[in-house]
Length: 137
Image 1 (cartoon, rainbow, N blue to C red):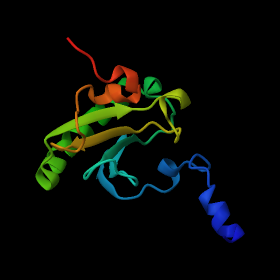
Image 2 (image 1 turned 135 degrees about the vertical axis):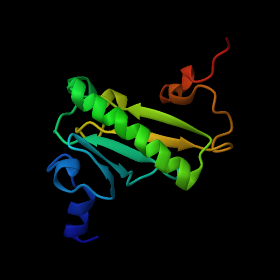
Image 3 (image 1 turned 90 degrees about the vertical axis):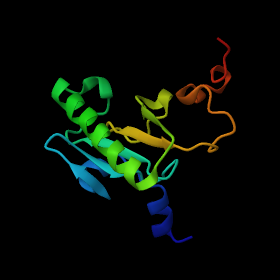
Image 4 (image 1 turned 135 degrees about the horizontal axis):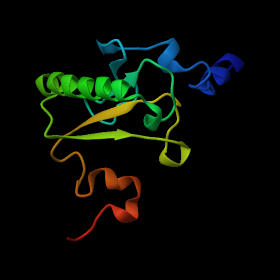
């Protein structure tokens, strides 16, 4: 592998920030946020909603930015429903390295779900901690 290819492979997505410098596949634009299809989709239609202001934690967003992001989630749902017709959704945000955040610019995942995409979907987002995913009520 050439040194150029090795350098590209090791490229830090936070230097410069991918979401600030090179937004790709933009779907919907808003003054405070935008949406785009995820570059590494977990399922067909996987989309991310990204505030325009560079901030790493969801908890540091202003109320206006949160409202703009939530509005885009609803708009994207309509588009995803029309194009992909999923059976459900997971909406999630990774905040901090311990939660799996790898790009330190807030982004909210809209992950369409489909019947049969996993053997047992019980627990949904709880699968981030596998031992806690399945539970009895």
